[in-house]
Image 1 (cartoon, helix red, strand yellow):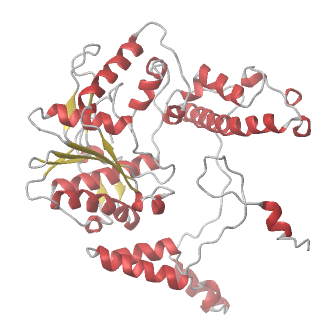
Image 2: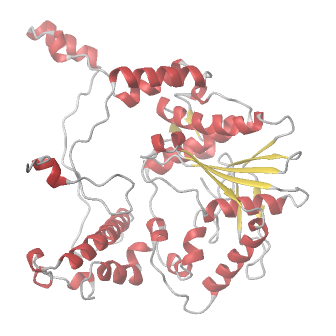
Image 3: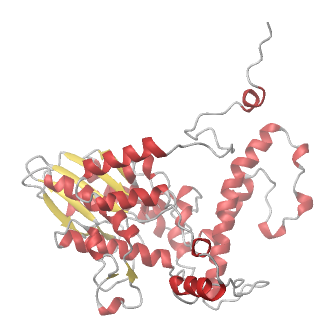
Length: 429
């Protein structure tokens, strides 16, 4: 969903200094100009699904609806101008959006004077920006006049990497924009909320609802940080600074600082990545442990960067831009049924005498799917759903590791003593 418009409205150009990319340009001034040199990446089904999920959430909040599953099998966004971008709402999408709706409505119901604002647009008036150049729109916010309580919500439909809310530049951008657009609001408490129910660690983060309390003074101070970042980005030859903000940068694949950082992080002597050869890489047995540790740390950076390069190159080929030495080809074909499963099974059993249980064996759904079905069965009764889910978990589930893997010290899991596991405790008496 774009920074500046409700999903149901015609889309305009994105702000170069919007909230979703605030972390990047606050840390890497040169990224703004570099991004202007690369073509717009092609859309994907994941982007279309995310847009549809945001549109569904927005529609429900604007119309006071509390049950997202009422729109299963309905196409979003609405409107003839979105005919080529629509995505059909699935039960999984509805269940994810429901987590967001429940979170927002819980705050709205907490006080009789609480006010809900959906897709509230705002513009920052900054000295180093052109009028209207820095703007955005909040997914949703709830303000309670009697207490000065302001909660700013951001819904993320992505199923991959969990987005942190702590000290989030994106959410600070939205909160400051919300407060500045309502200068008559007295604000004494600011809470930032990211709802990402499909993230990998959703179970460990209150179902994907992550909260962080922001100092109300930052509502005034943060726009000055944005203003300084705009000035830095517009200065001659702004510096490029690689970091975690590179992950979603459109120009990450062509960034010279990113390439240099990726190779140096692996403790290799710097050279252009295209100039590397197997002979330049040391054999693992010749490395000391400290250098091995350095290479392992750098490998994640290098791996992520190479993935961005491949994705970027694929996008160029899709758009007809030649990449020397590479071409687009069809993926290897896989056979698939082209008729109704029941009709195919009937054909095999009637015409060839195969047993029905062999051609259409029943299969228990996954634990996650079972929990989703329980949530639908107990829709509207969170306590009953939790009780049913906990009962199922205690009776029939077991969480056990499939083996061991290597992880950095920052990983929250406890280290395993592999030697003790292999040999057990030895009694020397």
